[in-house]
Amino acid sequence: MLCYSTNDPQGKTYPILEAIQLGLAPDGGLFMPVNIPKVKPEWLENLPDRDLPGLAFDISRLYFPELPVSTLESICADAFNFPAPLVTLNPEIKILELFHGPTLAFKDFGARFMARILGYSNAKQDLPLHILVATSGDTGGAVADGFFQVPGIEVTVLFPKGKISPLQQKQITTLGKNIRAVALEGTFDDCQAMVKKALVDPVMTRKYRMSSANSINLSRLIPQSFYYFEAYRQLDPGTKPVFVVPSGNFGNLVAGILAQRMGLPVAHFIAATNRNDIVPSYLKDGVFRPKPSVETLSNAMDVGNPSNFRRLESLFGSTWNNMRQMISGYAYTDTQTLEAIDRIHRDYNYLLDPHGAVGLLAAEEYQLDVHHHKPLIVLETAHPAKFLAAYETLNIQVEIPERLANKAQAEDLSVILPNDYTQFIEWFSESHPV
Image 1 (cartoon, rainbow, N blue to C red):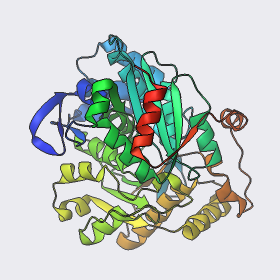
Image 2 (cartoon, rainbow, N blue to C red):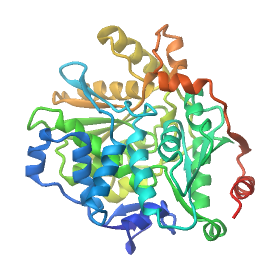
Image 3 (cartoon, helix red, strand yellow):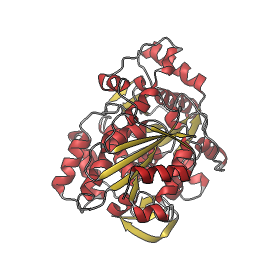
């Protein structure tokens, strides 16, 4: 499997394991497969006979044919040892629960797979691999957990100080050992810009072996495509669903498009987001306008310059109309989000997290717009317990899973740094002496 950079589609290609270790292309572009592999129609027909680790292995073989079969089987069995159930909310809308992993967020799918792939490919290296990752919430916890104590890999997580929930922060900052956490005095976009700058900084790349675990890394997106197939596996045969994808940096949506290009039957995609409505606005008028991110209750979507938009452009071409034929976009306020959480809890006794509530609103609006009665599948990306402040005003009690409650009492080991690249590099060099 070869990959290209979105900044130079006709230029140099890279073997997929090299692309994953680099994270970001040397020219600053994002890696994409030169050829998206296809699943066979008979495999789709027999999908109900597979389980999640089994289908993950089958798809992984298409991307990583050079890996030993036993290694890939072990990676998939270990990475996906939790369910992704499809829950029926009403006759038109189903909820795909992606929060049953160890850190209670959909990011576990990508982070656990990526950690094991990199652990395998890095095993023969003498120097450690340094993973840099920016997070607006759940990515940091999933990456920290997935890479914790993986030999030969050091992880640095940057998060915007005061802009993620307290429990999300504790999932990032309490592990220690090979996991370091930086509370940056800025926004997620500032964290992401710093990571991207470091990954192509010639001084840093000469000194350290570096990669990223954000959705800018292709190995995060490939396993996220697996749960689209897992949702389809749980539907009646012949069903062609609409997927509603809460989106911030839009890696989750790109993963869905990859699944469709692999052969998954999908009628349409809906990009649902909060007040950071850059992509829904683009889908309306064809103009991409990055802007400073706005803080919301659905903080994982507080992204003002979604990097994976470049992958969407690569998949659809730069023609706006191509993209909007397959993707609709909707955006909602915190007030609307809270109303949806409260209404769904009262009507169905089902508790959505703020991101899932945004997705639910988009599903309902899409139904009104197009009178669509095929199943709409809303991706519920995180457990409500990670966003307790959202439920206080609604007087809704949220049960906190034990593995999350234990984090609340652990010591926060993060450092606070200003939004200054020079100071970050000085800290990083002092923390990782060569």
